[in-house]
Picture 1: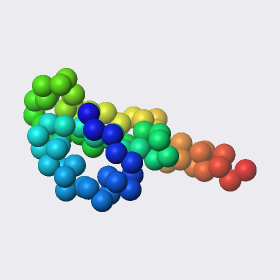
Picture 2: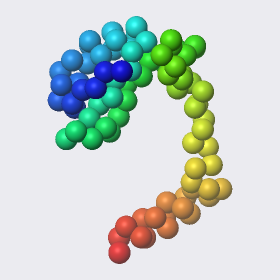
Picture 3: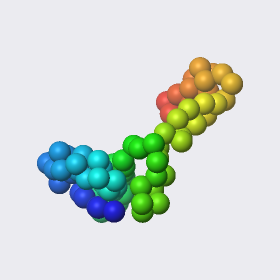
Length: 81
């Protein structure tokens, strides 16, 4: 797995995309802290054991409860205090 700082990742995005096509994942850091990952999206898991993100499709359903509007209004009220 590759590890790149945000600025370096931005400047080398075409190479990182080529690496993803080869099945390599890249962790993107900001100030030394991991904040994102660029991972290959494939029908099958690559050889190093990384799972495909397509298995997570729709997994956010219900994240905000049955009434997402109500939940967001409540959270906005907490933020404005």
